[in-house]
Length: 233
Ligand code: FPP
Image (cartoon, rainbow, N blue to C red; front, side):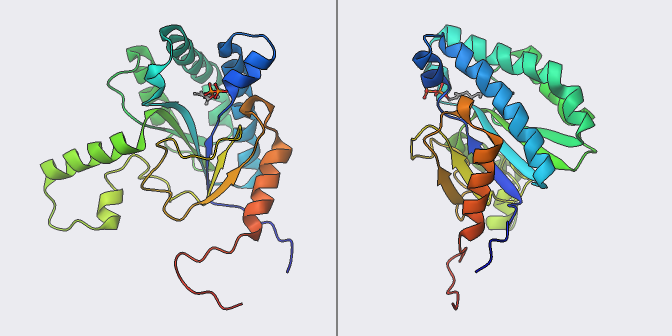
């Protein structure tokens, strides 16, 4: 048994625990999101250094609308400011940015910026960064079905159905990381995680580090992926 590091092609992350991180410091919840955004920036950069080709981050779910209005507004402002300030850095790193989720309920200025960034980064391919904003797995599947019914294709199989989903530019995730101790999927990438390996850590997202990310990848490297088959030992 070697300790060979297997770099997953696609890593997805549920960045949980920002609120608890802030509360433990007596800070407003939004400060946890600000710290979380800085960690996200560092992990994106580290992912490119490790040679990961696709990274998908859950930034705002279809259920997050149920949070207090001030927190929702602060999160969209944070996302918009962050994308505006950091887009050049992402291009310099040769990162292609894509957005998954609905676009009909989020601020129009953010939608315009998202379109601009997708267009300006479409030629880069060192890493594809998928940011999930107003994203829910069930909502995504329903949107795909509605589109499919309109198109009425002759053949509907797993491959053709996948093309109607938001992550059509990335393979299924090999590894899904969730921080902050919860062990649930929370409506993230329901179709795409059929054979994904899960890694859970108690670390709150704002405390997540490069070392912990590497630890998750080392753990992933030891997994035997069978995809339903029998593997001879
Ligand atoms: C979950 O923590 C986190 C979110 C709902 C928001 C995640 C967003 C960021 C980290 C900012 C991302 C920024 C970029 C640029 C990608 P929580 O608030 O549910 O924490 P809690 O469970 O402790 O309350």
